Image 1 (cartoon, rainbow, N blue to C red):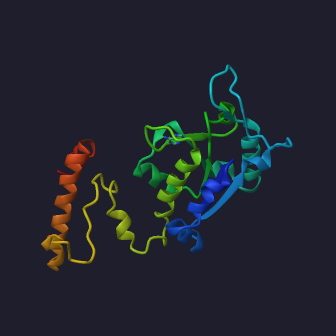
Image 2 (image 1 turned 120 degrees about the horizontal axis):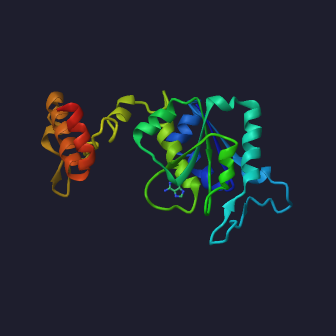
Image 3 (image 1 turned 90 degrees about the vertical axis):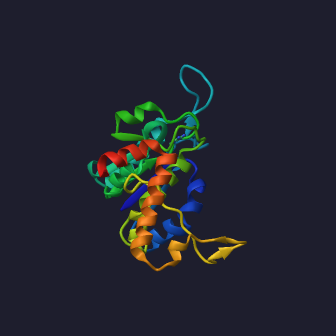
Length: 233
Ligand code: ADE
């Protein structure tokens, strides 16, 4: 998979892209991530990427030219029809694991990072772009949301997580939250790990985990639990 990130603030994304699972995914060649600085697509000496909104009001808007120029250049080398272009935005469709799965199957994802009040709406007149929100709250930077999406995508790429079962038992992979996990020591300050987990009885452990997942989901996310019950019971 190839992911291009268009941003006016490359330093926000560079650290996380070079750590942990994302770094491993890049090193293994499971994902190629290229960061483009929108300031490289400006034509004034101050490399201006934002301006005041027409009609007034607080905040700044990312200018149309640097974004469309960056996309034009990118799509001279890559087929625009095969790329999925995403704009992180609080106005977007809420990001879910099933949306992450859909994007993970795209060979090429382009993420445009907005900032301040967002981007000039006319960008949508030139390219088909899906807006995606990572939740009902406002971030000051689309870069943080872009990183959330990239992280969720990279870990699903074949070869990135050693134990692929680990990804498939995660919360949301089948509409249930994940079970609690424990590691050594078996006892800490008098608190013991649930006995079943040290029993070596894999069938019992599996049943215990499923029960934990169902109980947690019912308590914390009745919306998900209802969906699960409809499909599974
Ligand atoms: N940019 C600002 N807030 C955001 C959000 N909640 N999701 C995605 N992008 C954003």
